[in-house]
Length: 95
Image (tube, rainbow, N blue to C red; front, side, top):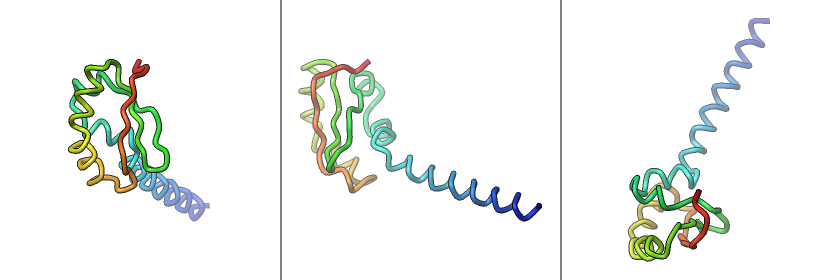
């Protein structure tokens, strides 16, 4: 019975380690590391599809502001996750 207990424990530890690694690559987690707190209050992750990260922005002013920073933001994100090839900003719901 002890062997089963150890096996289950090892499986759970391995699963949790893999889950932690996957969350590092999660686009939503990356956004929290790349954007400032002020910017995070005006954006919302929309989707990640075919290398494009879609982000909703709450106003045209913030859309313009983030569009100006798009190059540097993309560079920072790509250092952490090479799968992201583009960032697309849209005016939409952020709440």
